[in-house]
Length: 80
Image 1 (tube, rainbow, N blue to C red):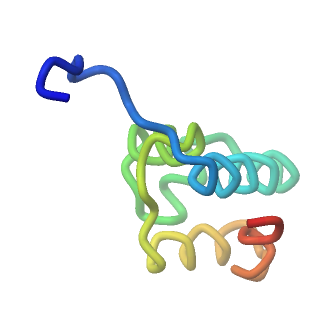
Image 2: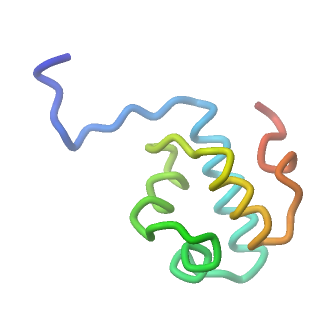
């Protein structure tokens, strides 16, 4: 693993499912990544990585996203 490129990101299935849910609810709420990042107090790059399943999302960040798109947190975890 020491030879792994710094750019290569490991995408775990549960991260991808959560990221896909966030993207879907964001689009349903007619929000851009930039506007959601601002409302949820997240860095835009971080939000993009979360949506792609590249970054682990904290419970706090998930709660802020849920509030911004007006959806229950549990809806983001369905199917996991």
